[in-house]
Length: 327
Image 1 (cartoon, one colour):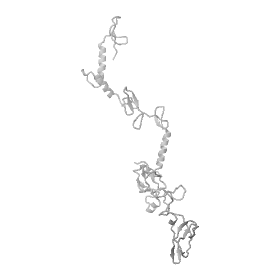
Image 2: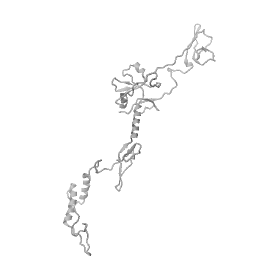
Image 3: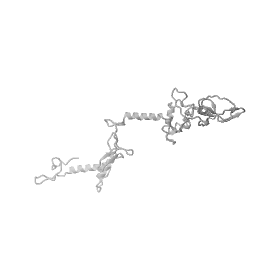
Image 4: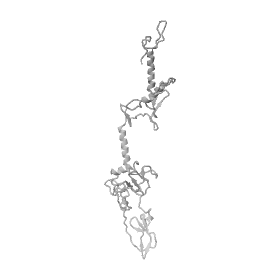
């Protein structure tokens, strides 16, 4: 293509209508220039794959639209090209493209806070090492609680937890729980997989594998049990069950002729009688007469609350085990 270059064109190769009063001649439109313009326009139409159609005055527009859609590549991170306006972008009526601010429901731009995210001089966004270390530590603490009994605020079992009721937990369902076992996380609190009933009853606080090559563990049985804190070097075995016991008490009793009245008692100082000035009665005496002798019979329930087990004052507190994230 070229600018008009006839002898009557302006010095800068433009058209002029001329001025007869000077006189300056009007620019002569040459066939050479017209053919050049024609062929340039025809080239656009035919390169778009269209055939020239004399009545159709929109072919140039059609060709341009088609070429833009076919010839222009899709933009990548390494090459320029066309981009489609997505949910994180907006285009105004004037064609101004802007990036929206990101929300939980919409993509967009974010502003690094300098605490968890940062941008280097090259514009690369990265997680700050300190924040990354915090996330790592939090995940370590989360995994540290897997299988550890803990108090719960409700009688409703939360997700990813189990009651320590002796039920079976399969590793394929709870892979993190299985990883803790494989890594020795329950060391000292696992009984043999083939433990008999007596051994299981003596180790209610321990896990039990379901086989020599386990696919899961039976949970401890903590229901109704009191916890007694264990540390390295302390008496007792971690996870073992302790039977119901009381300290031994000794006293001396006299077998005397049966008195004429009842109401005798065994007092806290080891003596018995019916003297109200003595110490608190810890056991009553039923006046059981055998011949000429009074046979003492003790019943602690006459002095203190009694039940089927010796227990301190207590609260029934829900306790649960965290199993980690499910498969």
